Amino acid sequence: MSTQKIQIFDTTLRDGEQVPGCKLNMQEKLVIARQLEQLGVDVIEAGFPVSSPGDFEAVKAIAAQTKEATVCGLSRAVANDILTAAEALKGAKRPRIHTGIGTSDLHVTYKLRITRDEVIARAVEAVKLAKRYVEDVEFYAEDAGRTDNVFLARVCEAAVAAGATVLNIPDTTGYCLPEEYGAKIKYLYENVKGIDKVCLSTHCHNDLGLATANSVAGVINGARQIECTINGVGERAGNTALEEVVMILRQHPYLNLTTGINSRMLTETSALVSHMMRMPVQPNKAIVGANAFSHSSGIHQDGMIKHRETYEIIDPREVGVDQSSIVLTARSGRAALAYRLQKLGYKFDKPTIDKAYTSFLHVADVKKEVVDEDLHVLVEQQNLVAAN
Ligand code: KIV
Ligand code: ZN
Image 1 (cartoon, rainbow, N blue to C red):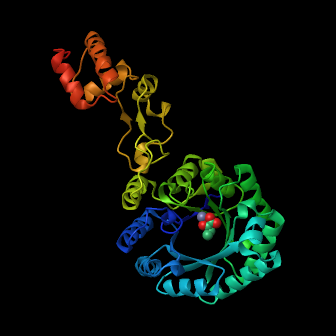
Image 2 (image 1 turned 90 degrees about the horizontal axis):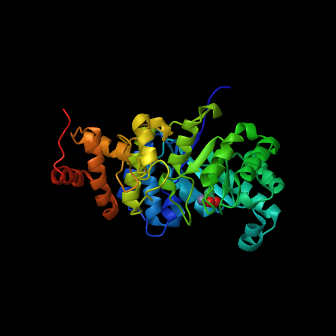
Image 3 (image 1 turned 30 degrees about the vertical axis):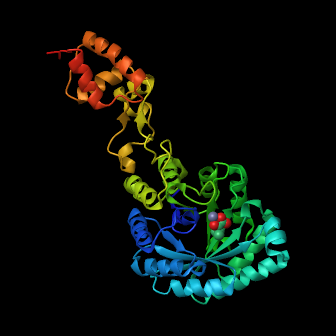
């Protein structure tokens, strides 16, 4: 089976930026968009042009600056939204309008207060209107995760017939289980007329911590685009983390799914977005957290020193981290202490290491982490003598 390319649709600047306190100014958005393009994303969702004059201008400026990636603007299935998105995207080399409407019974009954047939009519009208301005039109069925599959397939079929090129199936509330979301994508793949001509897209939220798992289930079942954000930023518990899905596909080559992302730029991109959004990355965050390649327990450190792959599935250089780190704490063993002392230029025989280790444990019990400076002091205070 030949390897299939999964399109990476980054929505850090749209869904990601909806996080309270993470608002970016125009300059910051341009810098992030440039970084995303260098990283190799296929689509940059630059904003929601009708939402504010600032967002309109940002989408316009990103459209003008971007050379290779598709630039996308969000709209509701509302004529003025679509016209405003089309206007903001005028200067884009590859423009895409992203339009859609809620499809779950909850959205149809309580939010939209219209009938299911009216939802389909509005979806068709929106896609047809967007199509007058751009060739590439993505349709989203908001709350597809909680939409009954038979109705969802009807809406998707109508959107495809109206000219949609991409069908986005958002799990807007992060409700689905991976099996359920994967089955939904499979059902659409098998039941929507014309689906073979368009691209199915995942868009998963992380309310139950399943956004990444659901996105992967989606592509295993036929989706060919993943919508995600750097560091998984996004409303509430966030969106699918770009770095996670990219590395999952890379670490599991038998899936025959690949992306165009330069994984060596993941760590610097994560740091840039975290800094500009003033949103720290949790230390234990997969792939880009400060502790993702750091080892502190004695058992793991001993294995790591002997052979890195005993406790690491990713070579840190693959994601732009120079090397794994061996952190000295009260849980560390002699092997780790000897290793770190050696890195500082101290080569001791076994009895000396034993002596150093006893002193080290006293320091480690007081301090959370024993750093290089502490080791130099320890060697001096204990008068440790190097082996010949
Ligand atoms: O989560 C969602 O449903 C969305 C759509 C607007 C695409 O972000
Ligand atoms: Zn979303």
